[in-house]
Length: 316
Image (cartoon, rainbow, N blue to C red; front, side, top):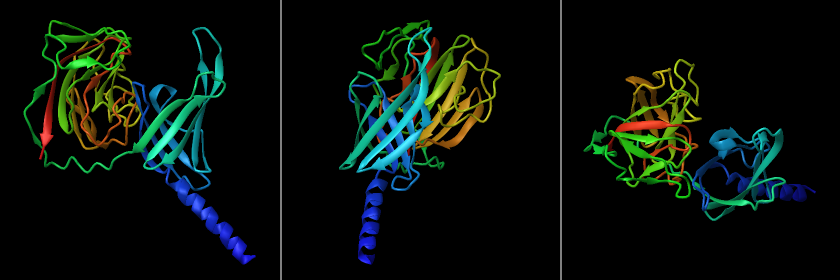
């Protein structure tokens, strides 16, 4: 009897050990998709696993409503209400994500219960441990102007199948909103970024650092800050204060990114001071966190204008 109990205990521990391999942070590629995803699993192999995920609910950072591991499979899901069309009643939606470990990769699918669409396939790899720190030892290289004030040299549309509305007028880069996002053809690692923007009342945009981490641009002047406010690291780090100016005025960002250490200065006020970037945000389209990435500008939300875009590489 004791031998039987010991065998059951060892088998259970073995299953828990296998399930625990799901734990950690994962950078996710969706083949054929314009966006990258991010997943963090904690407590797999225990009775109470948890998961945080980007990008459910249109790109926010969300805690899964249900998480389970069984038979070498990770399953997590979200339950929410959604209006399928304008004027229609909201309906209950259940999104289900499944994944298995295949070597060093997390191979998964995503589907909505009751949908006639085939499951979306995705592939995850472990997020890298980035050693670079904002420790005062980095020196500035030669500044690189990213916008010449004349045309879109050095830029391209991120989504090739969407309307491209970006134009250049009087030294200003303009997007009418509702079109493709813009991305640099060059890629960068550690840097300081100077960028100026202007937007009309009620508009919304963003700046994608390395094509992964969104600094929010939003008309919310005078409102208490939160993790979705202007100058936030979208859905992850709230600004320390409201440093925004009213809509229609030019505003200036000075952004430093070294490894995962992020400092944001808006209109001369430091709103994020060496905040640690955990992982991808809603604008993320390049999941390769251990490699240089492009700068991207959001054009699929509201109207926005940019000028004086200069990036200064940082090096030892």
